[in-house]
Image (cartoon, rainbow, N blue to C red; front, side):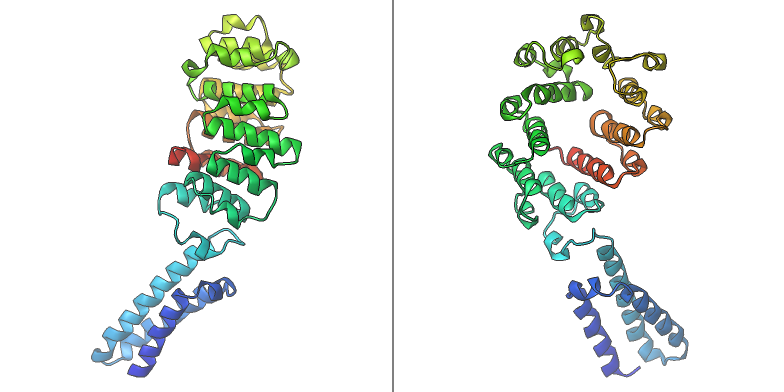
Length: 321
């Protein structure tokens, strides 16, 4: 190997490291570089001793480059690698990188690091406003969301993440938002934080047959005797699996089994939900989000969108936001 050729090879290695856009357009590049490294290793046997040191250095540099390229290729498609270069290296950031949709990656990074600049990289629309609301902890961005369901979700997520139940007053369905705030405190074992005034915020007929106000009182005192026979309320407390056979207050047996997994703090019950993939996915995600953060449960989720949500909630739990 001539010295000029060796120095040229090193310059190319540096060039590829500094030019990620070329890598993104050439998925075969890591494999080609690995093949090149193998060829150099084989040629080492016939090289003079003085040249072997330089050849070994080039091989090591090529292998390092292959590692860098493989890591970059594992990023979510559509993400500009340079957008994530300034992100702090920590476990929460690593989980955000597992999210498959670019917009959701930016959302995850924005919320985990409380950095709205990631939201600015998103396309204009509902998701961007929700991202800005969460990153800034500012409900004015929820007001800009036009779709009713998305607006409701914005207020529900923001009120809980910002620990401001009063944000729910502006939601399309305030009662649903209030109760979401309350039962999420309960699922996380924080029922002592449920205040009597929270229950009073619920309208008298909130939830209809689901009896939100009655349920709130029972959750606040952690006392199933206060459920007044409401099946919906009783489902928030530990019950035998047979309880799900005749529960008329859940939309399906699968929903009831999900509650059994959460109340018993037994994620294996989620595995028994075999006739409804959506509820099973929700069971894994809810357990990881509210009972005990568990990345392996997110890996079990079959629906891509729900899996991304599971990753995001896991990352947020890691970050402490």
